[in-house]
Every structure is written in C-alpha cells, then in structure tokens.
Amino acid sequence: MNITLRGSISLTFTSHRNRAKVHPPNFPAKAMSSDALPWDDPLIAPLLVLWLYLPGYLSNTAAMLGGKWIPDLTGIPVFTIDGGKVMSDGNRVLGDGKTWNGLIGGTVGGGILGMLTHAIAKGNPIDSAPFLDPLSSYGTHSSEISDAWFYFGEGPATAFAMGCILGFGCMVGDSMGSFVKRRLGHKREGNTSSKAPLLDTLPFAASAFVFGQLLLAPSIVSSSDLLMGMVILLLATPILHRSFNIIGFRLGLKSVPY
Image 1 (cartoon, helix red, strand yellow):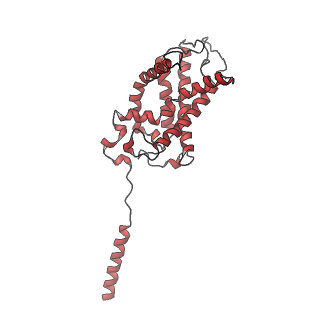
Image 2: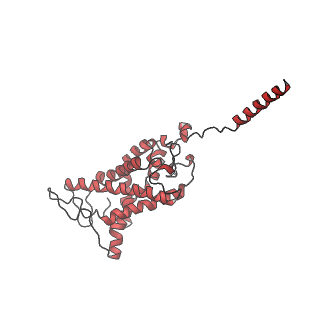
C-alpha cells in the first residue's frame, strides 16, 4: 500500500510539473485595448498610412529624377512609354511625360525609400506609431512575413522589394491619370504638365494603396485595418500635393506650382 501511495504522489507531482511547462499563446496586437491601436485613431491613422506608403507617395519625385533630371545632366536618351502613338481622338496615349526612364526611376526609388522606412522603424513597438516597421504585421495577420512571396530575408532586400511594388503601383496609377487626361483633351506643353489637380493626385495614391493591399500580405502594409486612414489620406492628398508643388516651385525645382 505504501509503495502504491508513493507512486500515486509521484505521478501527481510529475503531472503538475508537465503542466507548468506549457506556455500560453502569444496574443497578437489586436488583443490590445482599442485606445492603443493607431489605425483606430483618426489623427494617427492617416499619418501611419502615409509612413507605410511613403515609397508610393514619393515615387513621382524619383520618376522625375530618372525621367528628366538625369537625362538632362547626362544626355542619355529618353524613351516614351507610348512610343508617340496617337489615338483616334487625336491625342497621345500617355504623352511625353510618361517614359520608361521615369517608370524605372520611380520603381527603384520606391525600393530605396522602402529600405529607408524599414531601417528607421525596424523593431519599433506598436506604440511607436506612425513609425511602424513595414516588414512587421503587428498582429493584423495570422501568418508570418517569411511566408510572403516577396520575402528575401529579414533585412533590406525584402524592404526594397516591398518599396518597388509600391513605387510601381504609383507609376501605374500616375499613367492611368495621364491616360484619362489625354482623353479629356488635357495636353502637355513642352515640359509643362497640364493642370488637372484630382487626376494628378488621386490615381497614383489609390493605385499604390491597391498594390499594397493586394500584393504585400501578410505585412501591415496590406492590412484592412488601414482603410480608414487611407480614406482620410486620400481626402487630404490633393492639399498635400499642391503644398509640396508650391514649395518645389518656390525652390526652383518645378516650373509650375501644380
């Protein structure tokens, strides 16, 4: 009887020790209080989206660098995307402002900006918003970034790929805006773009958002939690775009303030 009792006690203690080794699950960031989630704050949410999509928002500047400034300085040839083709309405498909040089420059520039935002925000906790790491998910996705098709390791290569995707998305949207402008009869005059505020701002931003949402899962960049911030930022984009252009015009970087 004594041997059986000691055996029972020993088994009971062993069972307790085994249960003590079981680790609780790691709860994602979404288990936090809603007051702590930056994408639910109407002031922080658009700033967060602007930060995460900065490679898309600033790709137009990189496109101007690749499509105009570098060719002007070096004399390298510029190749228009539409090849000079004129449609039945008598207007160019896209116009001289949309070049392969600019497309490549904008895409690569987006990649460089992607590496920059990752380097600045790498490892930042969620309370560092809006400066969150684009390579993290912050609990908005159940899968890991290492499962993504664009993953090339935990470093600048993956950030570059993500930035290139957003930059290319910006270029696609910008070209779509030019296509619509040409169909409406808006034409470039030399190096001066025709004035169409909404078509110059909304298509590139909306296209960058679409590319990020569809192609960059499971990073936070593709999270549907960002939708409120995207809507707010889209409404503010024409104002931001005009402000940046006025600054560029006064600094002598642009020939027109739009």
